[in-house]
Length: 193
Image (cartoon, rainbow, N blue to C red; front, top):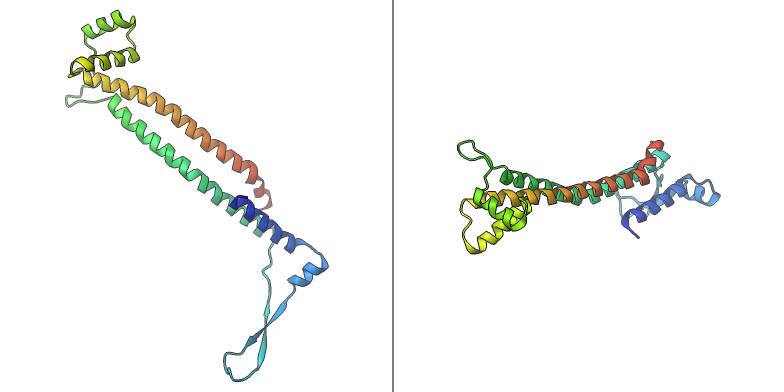
């Protein structure tokens, strides 16, 4: 049994005790006396009584307790998901900087050499980002990329962004589902408070 289920059952039992009108329970909730030794003179065996009154719970108090438990549990489950989402968003932001570089003279991006375009057309039939990446990876096995490296890094960053955005969307959906579940389970508590 999970912690929140145990707490809910415990609170329900307390609520049942408080709200019940049975004879044995009401006598239990009445004032009781507990003997207490006097602190003034320990040599005397004088016993005094202290009256203890149990706290009175109302329906609103129990509802507030349940609402607080549910919000704490929601926060506990949401925090790791939100942390993962933040990391994914940070990664996407970093990849955007790589995918859209701005150089010292205000120039941006990179270019593909015309002989590279012709080689890609001959080998793959089309010039696509994936074909460019494959071409550059094959090229790097035989020669250094040199100036081609900028274009290769930009293409890899764009591919990373596409994959990360899919992951980001799934993370956001998980958060939305969790929030909806808690609203369904505990949202009805608001009608009592």
